[in-house]
Length: 390
Image (cartoon, rainbow, N blue to C red; front, side):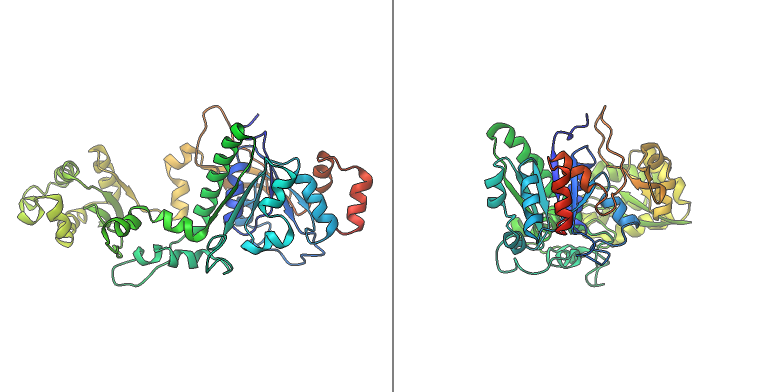
């Protein structure tokens, strides 16, 4: 038995934020039923990219797939019958869609008071922007991330991953787990909802509270840390490395490793505050010495001295690294069409428990199997197919 095996999740999500949420549950054994429209209704590839591509395979793994036409009376009735036996429903439609379909929280709770509904939107379930279409890059811009990303004076820069999508999914999954824990005491579910905008603002963390508490507007700091000096990217003889060395003790170690005791006597570098004020001068002193040797040599020396330091990898180098290999972050999943594929395993480890390792289902692959488990007999299934509800 896996940790979440007792929970059944009906997954209505698409693209990335919603599927990211559901994946957290599916990876740890939840009985996740991915619900898609029948092909004759959704004739395109659907949202989220090529179903056999890396992105889709990664985000929709560990589920079973059924087709269901929620816009037909029979399809909606089938879904509602499934809700009566489920624990969680997750959706990332625009806020008004679930009400129009009749699958809003009040409607679902009337069927099953214990149901937990997880919802992700672009900007929130109400308010002046509630009906706007949500997209990760828009949330990155409106949440402040782009304003602090990139080199000073360069202008706003998008982060290299869909931060708002991914974090909205993670926050929603945490909320669902909180609601399931509470249900053990109350017997009742809850509506858990977040948005790309809320998640992005929350992820700004100390940058956000620099404004809320002190009225400071953080700016781009490039590869330097905005508050901790010296922390940033430095050139070596054969490439670049990252060094994170804030604080007096860390500075002392850096000086010792680099052998720059004389340079460090400069009054402008005497304290954390002065090194921060004179950031360019501080970095230049380090840079002059670092360019005299190879990156791997400095990484080894700094880490031996207890100074956080590491290389800057491309993705191929990430998975070639001995520690990444040791952790087994790339793992093999057998796929009926693609053969063995390598996906990224869940990053948390639960001692004694193993995550699920099942491929992403094809559209409708498990429709009849799942419906039988929910109590539908062969005649009912045939009738649903005839009505094009599945």
